[in-house]
Image (cartoon, rainbow, N blue to C red):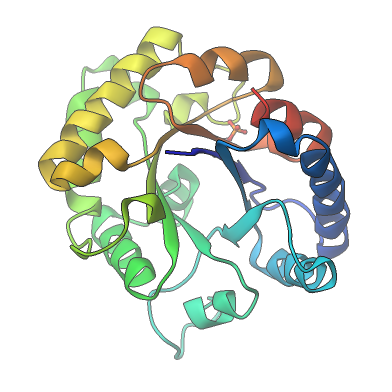
Length: 255
Ligand code: PGA
């Protein structure tokens, strides 16, 4: 199973900035290609920046990273002002979508039922999915880690088609209190949570659980990535702030 090293650019970068950073990252990745045989690199960028990456792909013919959308609406087309459909995303040659990020859960009120529909819709329409779960500090401190992760997975994965390929669906465990705060979870917290995710997955997707990549996200930086990548059941990372500069993201990718 290749490690999946993913960036989440959130609501940063104009198309021009996205293109320029992606070009820098391409050069750095090409220079290190011999160290990347067991890794895949993925960028989740704002919808409007997908077109800039698609132009770059057309000009370069091949890019050393994959890219995907941070959001989409689960309908083919229609009167959904402000949303993008998967066909629009597909037109940019993006292959992945992010579903269930804690910012979408918190600020845009996306609940487990909608996220289940989005995950199903994406897989059925040929997209690969990174599905995020994670507890708030309040939930952790009141002893609800297990129940929160369990319901996010059981309800969020309730509609997965039975015939998808395990390499097309990854989980990102991101404790909400560690996102953008500089507070990274301890190695034992990460190990415990990833083992929990793996165990719950085995009840939901059975034999696919052992081939499903589980990424860690939340204040991953060049200086902690090496240790995080060594933890059992950590099959990659999802990186926000430290992915915005190619020079720092490359260090994490190589960790
Ligand atoms: P962070 O964000 O690396 O800035 O903490 C991670 C994420 O939100 O995916």
